[in-house]
Length: 451
Image (cartoon, rainbow, N blue to C red; front, side):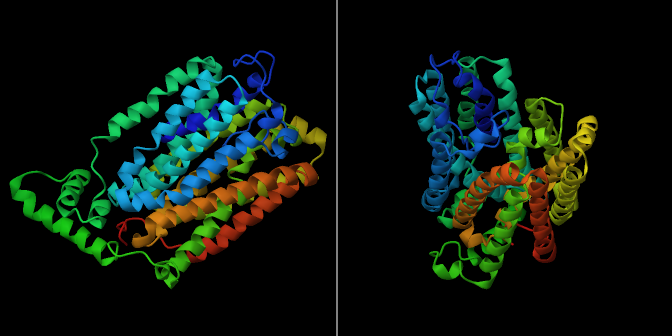
């Protein structure tokens, strides 16, 4: 499902030039003023003037996502996280159906809101579900795998546009959320979720399923003892009690939310998101002779390799040993790009385009191997168990806000002050994250989810 959501985000940017052309697949060009600020991960091939101006279709995606970020914790608390996950594919399916039948701009407004609903629910429910059903030894791997499939989907969506026609693409991709819905039905709800709602017998069966414990009668006593450990820890966390303001305003929660705020600020203002959005403009100012779309594809491919590295290493070396070097490497590479732009002549940049390409590749790889892959993993693990669902909702609202700030800040920096200043600002936020997270972020590798 995360792959599907990535495809849903990635298809729009390369489709936009066709939609606004005289050969638009919907029968007539859509108004460019309505699509200038697209709130997705990729904006390759849209010129800077279009990016700076606020659009209504792009805002529709952000509004849908933010609404779900804010309210999803309520149904999660009352009906359980798995039932909420049934909702995720439905807006996505409707999104592709409307894209197929679109005849005017209004359809795209509705599509963006629907995709926002799906994405807003997905980013809250999936990290929690993955964390609760995963064994301690693979929780980081599966959590970062979620981000890898999401980002890979964006690249896949970009490529599919060149392989399939406008009306064929929805017919192919719409089967993915349907497949997800069919596959998730047999899976039991997480044991922690069932314990919270008082279903101890179901919780024990779920625990044995996800731990892959033997059904041999001789092993039942050992299985029961292992489940009792989890049950006692979960119930001791106060998860069955009503959540009050005191659960949020205490030393433990305050430290968690403080670290999450720095993590989200470092994630976005370090450029891990915005640099991909405005890659074509950045490479153009750095004198690259590559086509803008090729630059974006290059960074997308490097990003996938970085995410694969995170999946392979996160449970071997730990969160800190991936995140801290990631911020350091990203900051140094951005500093290098800034210095290159500041002191190199335009002729030098034009004749040695590989230098900027290499530095930007390092930025892409180090960001993906650390801050991009681990943000959701770390947020889930930092939050106290009792307030995890509402805490994730609050954190995702913070992420939406930081994305918004990054998207309105970076084009202004690039256009008014240049790439060098943009890179120096990004490197400074990497330094902020490096210092604060390097000092205060605890290592959570190998600890149980109740810890």
